[in-house]
Length: 530
Image 1 (cartoon, rainbow, N blue to C red):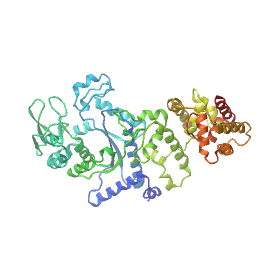
Image 2 (cartoon, one colour):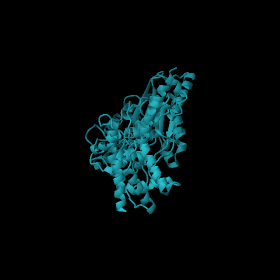
Image 3 (spheres, rainbow, N blue to C red):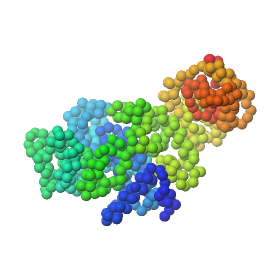
Image 4 (cartoon, helix red, strand yellow):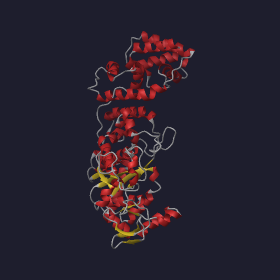
């Protein structure tokens, strides 16, 4: 057993917990005489009615983390692969308002997305276009995956064995599904949705006959005629709940995670899989994100952050960290969380090299980077960069580097590309989120005296220019001016008077970065305004 494998057996990080549960499932199947044939399959699903979004990213990045943990735990005993499947045979229920010439798509309502023309004019169908957008999205993050089109799987025979089995087990599936439906829906429900040979639409109609021997279903078409179709060859698709379970069976899925909105239906998916003679996968349910008001994030409402929005202001790794942390806790996802996520990532990255191995595999950066975190970090926090931007108001990053180089003499944009990138992010974030909300206030009489004292001590300062020494100086000024019993009030005053905000990074670090004389001048300018 390798050292990593031994560590993985006891690691507490949630991807390892899931990896061990998955391995246990595989071992139980082996004891039952059903050893895994082929690779261990990790699956994620994608609804291609709209563009890939932050939920898509989260599902793939978290599944990848479990896959990496499983590979470490099993030390190459199992081949693995990640499947990302697009549900592109679903009927188009509404025309997305963001597509070009949306009215041109109205005649294609309820047709499979792969039968709807591509309004962007780049692919054979709307479904193909969205599938390509998904792949480009995943490729931009470097994910390793196999893309599958549900339409292809229905048409090329991949799903045929399980579709025929579902036809044989039609009554058993109905016994599972009918109790979950209202009386009106029960009267017309069928797990099979035929594609009308006359209109091309996905039909939600009851079956007049099912013939497992011939592999066919009979239904009333939209023109009133009875039609008999084979359930193979892309002539039908399954309702989404039976489809979920059928897909697990047909693709041999061993692990899948999904949002809490699927939790109540998960037992149904599993029952369908078992009816089809297969074992359902290990499942992991994660909580959904909330907006700043505690409301569920919705693509329709537009009250969340898109991936491209996050990446305007922060690194992909910081977004991965946000996804890694407490996936089973409801978390607010809005722009204010970005700076904290960036700095937490930098802190974890800085700690990693000096940690013992059993701590390293608990460190989020191990999971974010597939067990191989980069060595480069940043000598300056994102929060500190934001305050530097607020003090300097630079037009480009080169103006920030004049201060950065003095603080970290060995750092250059070429030797510290991460820091250079963070400087650009800080400028964008400050411009869009901090500057518009700044509210400066004048100092109280006590604060005025303390700030004057601090400016004077900085003017005469001849000590070491280190964040720690300068922080000690700031503490001393606060205590000497009546803030000893509540030093937090002193630092709050510094930020509200000087920066127009109620909090920030350690002030000693800011002085070291911005410069002792520059900080003294900033304080004096603020006092002149009072």
